[in-house]
Length: 114
Length: 109
Image (cartoon, chains in turn orange, blue):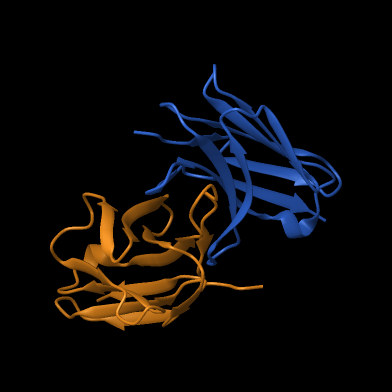
């Protein structure tokens, strides 16, 4: 069964450094998402991406964040200058589109900012 | 904003018993979804119910939706130890899902 993959599974970085989190969504899906979950808290929406552009973003997704689908298969989330409060699990998700609203999530990348 | 909030926050039952989890939300929706998350893992989609549906079944899962009360329930019948996980309801449409805080279900063998 097709699945969403994410790399790396765990990333440790120093405050102020740039990180790129990578995702490979399910191949025939059209809508892509990033969510994050700070330890012990709820899953929060960051951004949605469709037709090679951002369709919606949350207040969390400020100028330090960007997304890209560089080659038609990878979907990346970049944090330009990480802060301690960016430490969280980051989940990529995708949706097929049309009348299908189910989202399929990857296993997540645990980002630790020190 | 559309927001699911679940109750109880934690539920502990014996294997074989049924588990009922509830979710309330605030605004109009076109669908409501339930997801499961095992500790430290990603979310797994369980079931989706559309706003024009009142009840839906999938294996041991039964979900109901009452749009007049803006609430949903997830029933897991004949629970197993492997059902131990966190369960989230989520509301949304095309762009995003809004999750509740989740319910921690523990099924004792």
